[in-house]
Length: 431
Ligand SMILES: *[C@@H]1O[C@H](CO)[C@@H](O)[C@H](O)[C@H]1NC(C)=O
Ligand SMILES: *[C@@H]1O[C@H](CO)[C@@H](O)[C@H](O)[C@H]1NC(C)=O
Ligand SMILES: *[C@@H]1O[C@H](CO)[C@@H](O)[C@H](O)[C@H]1NC(C)=O
Image (cartoon, rainbow, N blue to C red; front, side, top):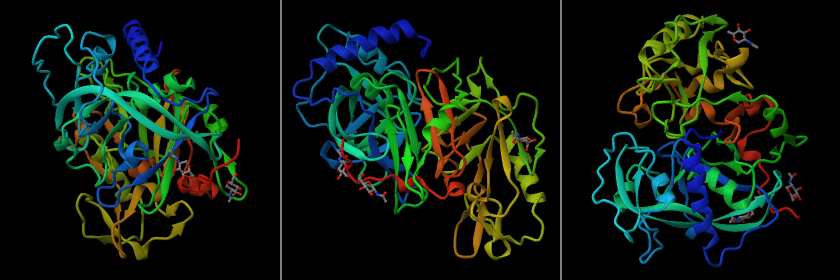
């Protein structure tokens, strides 16, 4: 079952379907094709936005977000009664740090309020639940094909909630495992699998890509390369945090190794504590650099620092506490020639961080260790996971999530096969 509260989910989804079915004037493709959207990186904040053609405005991409929300809804806007299932679902998961303060009991005919969360600064607000029209291109996994428009259930939000988001972002697109997230609603609305592929761009000048609804995934190269089939054959289980059903993408790490030597960590250091809801490894697109709990960060830091030889240290530059002089490092196709870091996963698999993922260039002369110690002030640290895999480590890899099976898969660094996330062919193809 995709959800623990599956019967409640089913009831709510039926409610979603009734609402969406009654939405007037939407053009919906009936041939069940996935959709494609550009993903951009904001140079100032290092956060990612996803293109969405409602008024041409981008939304912050929040992999762990439960909802879609748009600030400054037009008035009037569509509302829902508060006593229907979808309203309960919109409020299932209370954002961390946002106390649940029901202002009024739901009285017959009152409008549904949704609690909205800014995943960057941790602020929350509440406003009317509504429908949001989304426009994207259908895709065959190679090109955009034709525009598709559909309505999703989301929320309005107060304008102040846009603080800390990239300039120009109009709201947030939550991509979590909860039933009002974008991948669930695309799946539901367009009749496609509740799967998505995410390829975050490395540079702020180039666009990456997200495909919702399964199917092949091709990037240009010589020759073009189809990546989905191989990744789908090598899926790993996603985990749930039984204490806080927050829809985040948790997975199992069993250990970390540097240069194939296991870094000493306490037994069970990476596991989810099912009573406290803490621990575990999660993906976060709103955390620029992978953050580790101090008891994991320190030994990794020391092991990495001990391993390279003949490399000159440079003064630390916040937020990084270990930097090197770039001129003393060799460079390969996978980045700087430094020891590999293996994130050891289920079934003996590894996610290997090569130099391109473990070191970040901070200026012409200096590179820094691109993994940081977790701080309580990071919004993604609110539930105290052990490991937060951040944008810098996810970029230029293809990640695929299957919400129905509860699995995920990933490619190695795309530079290793001479392609990259900006190589999706966005030229309109023909059907
Ligand atoms: C569809 O793709 C074309 C070609 O890339 C692009 O110009 C257009 O803006 C896209 N439409 C939407 C709704 O994203
Ligand atoms: C995974 O990494 C560990 C530690 O570096 C190593 O011992 C093991 O051989 C790797 N497994 C695979 C399948 O590469
Ligand atoms: C991109 O797609 C278009 C439409 O299918 C095709 O004509 C063009 O050759 C493709 N570009 C490359 C570089 O393959």
